[in-house]
Length: 289
Image (cartoon, rainbow, N blue to C red; front, side, top):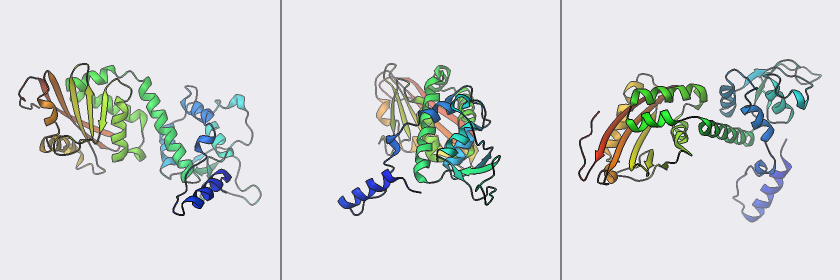
């Protein structure tokens, strides 16, 4: 089944450019507020809800109970309500592993679901990112930022790990997500955030600038699936920062403070290491662990 809106718009694009690629034209033509509202509702309790949504985004499937009839009034009444709503509105489809019968095509009661196509996957990923950003905005990050600027690696690592456990699943634990995860922590916080911008002899993953207090943090993020490599990965991040002299453009800034962070991720685990130069004057000081 194809979306008529997408087909018509794609044909129109092909008349203009024969090399035009299909797009999700219909995404902004409707509102998904009711789904977002259910996901974010405090009354909507699903065990590992974010894990299930993340699994869907990565092509995984899961089982849930199907109810043939439910009303708007009881949308928040059970854990399976969201999956029923998504299934009956076409956002989910049956997995080939689902039990089926010749009469109904599926058995009312229990079935296995997955996302039907790339378009819906794009929507789900955007919704998950929006949910995470909102969660970060609502989170009191004052203690997190204090540990960050003080260079308190154990405290920052513990708080970061706690957020990881509450926010993502194993399927999200990839290099791109980890970079975005760290960037999301500082979004809307009043700091200037720069990503992959040239400094020194390369491009640090993230640079956080606190213009009010004239201080800068340089963050290098690495991800591995190998637990054996994990313990030394944060140190490798700091070695890369120093080897590439990412901090050099900032060391001669009067009354500046520089904090260097190496962050390593493996599945839901995080390791943080910090080097800092406190209150630089006209000449750079020695880095201290």
